[in-house]
Image (cartoon, rainbow, N blue to C red; front, side, top):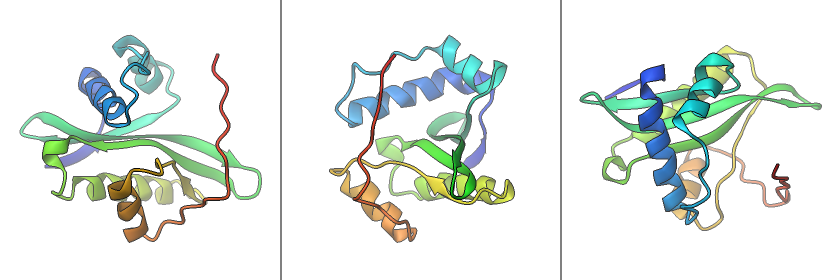
Length: 146
């Protein structure tokens, strides 16, 4: 297994995993992103970055992240998604991807890393708690769609 920076040729596989994640999160019809747009967002006019886990030339997991900002702390990392295909779970891939993103944040001297986890996703909650994460129940997420 190899954790590496995503390459442009990985975009179709990443988008497939994004759809799998949406299916897992019970929102299969919410993904409107395309290979073309994800390619632009990752490589042409980058606004985010991705790491992939590859096993025998097959991408089995990914982490997508970007720079965010805290007026209190400064530059931060936002982990948008971390996903490992079901058949590959329990092999430490999620931990490898998470650790690689944390390392990127530390290398960039970011002050913290943020993400969201669904309140019913007990395996993910346990995973983040195992990594000494603070899961803050006080904040309500706001969102506007355009």
